[in-house]
Length: 456
Image (cartoon, rainbow, N blue to C red):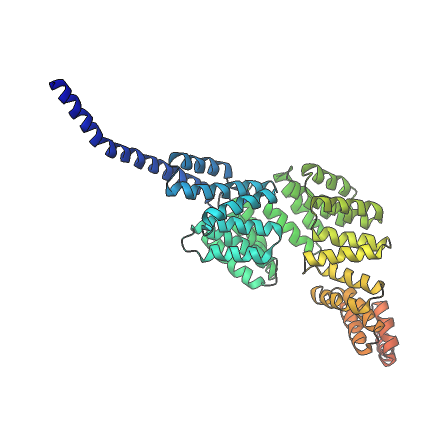
C-alpha cells in the first residue's frame, strides 16, 4: 500500500512538472526559430560592399535558414514571417535565372502572407523593374524608402534602383545628389562609386567621373563594371579607341562575362573591325538566352546591307525578348529598307509603346506613316521624335515634309529651318525651304557670295 502511495505521488509530481517542461521545450523551439529567421534575414540584408546587387545575394542560404525557422516552430510568429520571406528568397532565385513568371508566383505568395513587409515590397519592385513596369516599380521602391522599420541596407538598395531610374531619365542633378549621398554612406562600395561616375558624367564632370570609376575598379578589382561604364562614356564621346582600350581591361578581368564580351563587340562593330562578327558570335555562345547579342548581330548586318540576315537575327532576338524596344526599332529599319512599309510601321509602333523615350522609333513610325500617305498621323510621332532627338536633323526634316504635304507652309518652313540648324547645309532641307521661301534662297546665296568675296 505504501509503495502504491509513493507511485501515486510520483505521478502527481510528474503531472505538475509537465507544463513547465513543455513550456521550456516550446520556448527553446521559438528561440531556435528566431535564430534561424535572423540568419535568413542576414543573408537577404548582406552589405552593399560585399553584395552589390540582388543577383549577388545568397538566396539559397537565406532559404535554408528560413525553412529551418519554419520547422523549429511551425505555429509561431517567426514561422509565419519565415514563410513569406522564403517566397522572397525563391523569387530572388527565379529573377536571377530570368524566370519572371515563376518569380511573379512567389511574389504573390509572399504578399499573401506579409504584404507590408519591406522585403516583400522590395522584391515586388525588382519584378516590376524586370517587367518594365516603371510606375509599379516606383510605387514599391517608395514604399520601401518610406518604411522606417526597413533595414538600412534594404533602403539603400532601393535608393540604388531609384538612382538607376534617375540616371536613365532627365534629372541629372537629382541623380548626382543621390549618388553622392549613397557614396558617402558606403565609401567602400564599388557599386555606389560606379554610379557616382555615371552621375558625374551625366552633368559633364569628366574628371570626377573618371576618378569615381578608377576608385570603383580599385575597390573591386575582379569586377569589370567600372571599365564597362568608362567605355560606354568614351563611346558616347566618339572616342572609340579609348572605349576599346577600357573594354580590353574589362575582358582581362572577366573573359567569360557575356555582357563584357558583347560591349567589346559593339565597339568593334562601330570601328568596322573584322573581328566584330566573331565577338558577337562569342557573346551569343556565352549566354544563349540573351537577346542583346542577336540585336547587335542585326545592327551589324544592317550596316553591311545584309537586310535579310538582319531581319532574321532581329526576329530571333524577339523570340528571346518579345518586348525589347531596340529589337523592334532595328527590325523596323530593316523592314523599311526592304520595302515592307506596313510591317515596318507596325514594328516602330510596337517599339514606341514599349519605350516611349526611344526617339529613333518615333521618327521611324512618323516616316512610315508619311510614306503610307498618312501625313496627319505622322505629325505626332515626328513632333515627339524632334523633341527627343535634339541634335538629329532627320525628325525635323520629316516633320517639314509632313507639314508640306498638309499645305501648312509656315510650319513646314519652321521645321526645315530647325533641320538646317541641326545640320547646316543639309541639301534636302535647303531645297524644300528655298521652294517655300524664295526670298530665303536669295538671301542665302548673297551670304555665300559675301563669304567667298571676303576670303583672304
